[in-house]
Image (cartoon, rainbow, N blue to C red; front, side, top):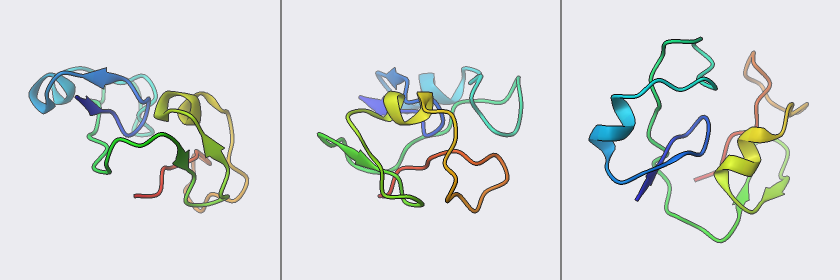
Length: 79
């Protein structure tokens, strides 16, 4: 299984992941899912604020990371 970096959605393979649009992609609607390149874990830590989440989907469902240096202020998983 592979996961989208932006929304945490799970796919059976990379080809399927990159051919579908992701509503949470910060580049805007119509842009594709992007591969999360880290290993599957039992918990994920935001690399900006250190908050811990059970899944990538939970991390991406949380609205704002106030420590983020990125313009869209999203949490991003540490690899």
